[in-house]
Each structure stands twice: as C-alpha cells, then as structure tokens.
Amino acid sequence: MATYTIAIVGAGPAGYFAAQALQNLQNEELTFAIDVIERLPTPWGLVRSGVAPDHPKIKTVSKVFEKIATAGNLRLFGNVELGRDVNLEDLKSKYDAVVIATGTSIGRKLGIAGEGMPGSLSAAEFVPWYNAHPDFKNLEIPLDCDTAIVIGAGNVAMDVARMLALNPDELDPTDTATHAIAALKKSQIRKVYICARRGSENASFTSPELRELPKLEHTNVIMHKEDIDEAILAAGDEPEKDVKNNLDAMRAIAEADPTHHERTLEFLFHHVPKEILGSDRVSEIVFSTPTGEKKIPAGLVITAIGYEALPLEGLPYEKGKVLNADGHVSENVYVVGWAKRGPSGVIGTNKSDAAVVMQLLAASLKEPKNSGDINDLLAAHPVITQTHWEAINQAEVSQGEPLGKPRIKFADRDELIEIAGL
Ligand code: NAP
Image (tube, rainbow, N blue to C red):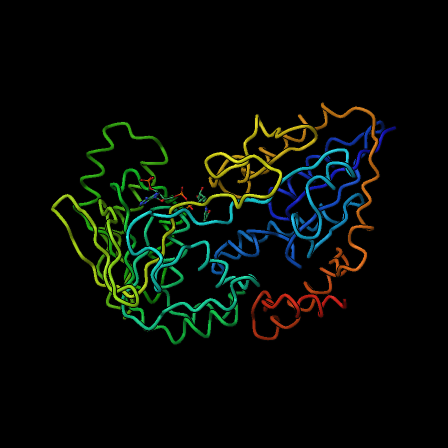
C-alpha cells in the first residue's frame, strides 16, 4: 500500500472537487494524504466570496465541501499564502504532487479611457465587497448617484446589477456583508443599466437567472421588445437549445405588463463601451450603438467582462490562465478549475474537470517520497485548521440565526483569526 502526499492550493470549489476526486481514487493499494492550503482564514472560495447572497441554494454545495474536508485524509492550512508563507518550490519538494486551484481573481479590463477613474470598478472588487471578503471590506463604493451601469452580459453582470437594483431590505435574510447591507440601504441608485456589446441572442446569461428576474418584487425589469424580436430573427429557425431558452425567457420579460416600482433594471443590447467621462469621478459613459454614439450619465460603472488569474511566482501563464496540458503544468504540478480553463462554467463544472486531472496525476505517480510536512515552514504562523474553521463557521451561524440569516460573516482577517481561537 502506498500513501502519496498531495498539496492543493486553494480551498474553493476546484480545490475541494480535486480532493474529492483523489478520495474517490483511493483503494486498498493507494491512499492520499491531502493538505489544502488557502490564503484566507476561511475556505469555500467563490461559494463564500462569489455566489450572490440572494442565491442561497447555490451555496448548499458547501455541505459537500465539509464532507470532503472531514473524510479523514484532509488537513486545512488556512491563512497560509503561496508566495508569502510558503513557495511553490517548497511544496514541490515536500509533496508528491501539487495541485493549483487558485481561480481567477483579477477582473478583465475594457482598455478604454477613463477606466481607472473613481466610480469605475470591476465585479472582481464589488462582488467580494458585498460578500465580506477581508481584502475588500474597506472599499468605498460610490452609491450616492441615481444611475449605475453594469457592462457585460454574463451571470456575474446579472448578479451585480440585481444587487444594485433590488430593494436592500430583501438582503436582510441573507448573508450579505453587514457593511454592504448598510451601504446599499443608503444607496441613491434607482436606475441600473446592463449594457451588452452584442445582441441578446449572444448573451451569456443562463435562462434560470433570466427567469428569476420577474420575481424581483420591488424592481421594474425592462427589456425592449424590438431587441428581442431582432435577436429571435438573428438566431434563425433552429437556434441552439440554450439560446432558445434564453430568448424565450427574455421575450417573457419584454412582453410582461410594465410595473411601477421606484427601482429599475434595464437591459441595453448592442452598446459597445468606448469611453468613461468625468472630471474627478465617473459622470458619463460613451457607447457606440447601431444608431450612432450615445452618452449615458451615470456615477458608477461596474465591469463584469470576465476574469484573469493573478500570476503566482514559479507558474507559467498564458491568456490569464496557468499554461497547462490537460491540467499538467510541469514536473509534479497540476492545475484545476478556472486557473486551468479560464472563468467559465458553473460550480459543478469543476467536479468533472478535477476528476479528469486527478486521474492524470494519479497515473503519473511513482514511489511516494515526500513527507508532506510543512509545519517547519509555518512554525510562528497562525494556521487555520479545520477545527479552527469550524469554530468560525459556528460563530457566524450562531450570530445570524436569531436574525433569520444563514450567517453573519466576519469580514476582518484579524477578527476571523481571533474567533478561531488563535
Ligand atoms: P461570461 O459568462 O463569460 O460573460 C462575460 C460577458 O462579458 C460576455 O457577455 C462578454 O461579451 C462580455 N465582454 C467581454 N469583454 C467585453 C468587452 N471588452 N466589452 C463589453 N463586454 C465584454 O463571464 P461571467 O459573467 O464573469 O461569468 C463567469 C462564469 O461564471 C460563467 O460561466 C457564468 O455562467 C458563471 N456564473 C454562474 C452563476 C450562476 O449560475 N448563477 C453566477 C455567476 C457566474 P461577448 O460575448 O460579446 O464577449
């Protein structure tokens, strides 16, 4: 019987599904001792910091992660950052294999004038802000204007626009960061545009998310019928199933009776962003449209146009991803999830993807030779173990429960470490 030591870097969906795939490969001859290394004091990655708080069902996958975490052969090393507390060379020499599952945390840029101005930010900042990610808790989001523009036609743009356009009282029973609920309750924003650069037949929204929009109780949702009619024509007689489902959902929105709430979410298609204008902060966005140039006044613009991986020392990158061949990077290093494939697919996509890469990893293993012991590197460092995390988890759930929330998240790194008892 052989036991191999594996380091997985990143405790998000891709990391946990990689661990699960390794657990599933175990038999009487083969076992794995898995260490999951995570830079935050909390695990679950995008399930904690990315999924919209008004979508609690999607977060139930965290129960699967906890099952994987407590299966017996996995140790959590939270609050340990690759490149700061340990480096890749350490991991390569101390483990039989290293799996990178660090995702794509940087928002893609439009590359247009004015993008760096106050009032212009990326979903890669706004989303972790409302989800209580410690690195973003102090972000100042200018919500003192009446109009916000979200650029992009994917599910992240939809999440961001919905969070800005819903009545913030609807967030009370959610685990939205306390600072974000307070700020959104003071928000002056009453009009949110989602601007897509192509027609609705090319939008990347998925139909369940579109079908949910009319259920917003305090927001007018506007799609223009002529946009959808034009898209139905452009999609032809036999559109792909996903496109047809999307267009059906969009047509239902476009044809619904108008509502008269204080807040409005409006979809604009064929709006290509050209420039962000303003003197000391964003005041207008210039678009090119089929009928010519159009300026829309807005005090906040959020881009949701995809993500790139944050480069880590020792790893090769290409086009915002870790350069890899079917998940193999080099020597005993592998990559899974969005760091491997780029930012596409739902949480479950990472399960099948990680399973294939872990088979490749297992097939390449020779004699086990590395101890998997990194404690000497972390002697003076506060490491969040699974037991510590369970204390944090319990504390968050306990303070949420009396208020009818699934949890109230601690957003401060030092506070998280203190709650853990370190
Ligand atoms: P996405 O689905 O790839 O959408 C990105 C959008 O940005 C596209 O509409 C794209 O338009 C647009 N875009 C790219 N570059 C642009 C530019 N320079 N100017 C204007 N628009 C530009 O990405 P995402 O929304 O970040 O989502 C990532 C993945 O997570 C997706 O698979 C998504 O379904 C998933 N997700 C799922 C959920 C859920 O299930 N509820 C929630 C959030 C995210 P073009 O098509 O024209 O390039």
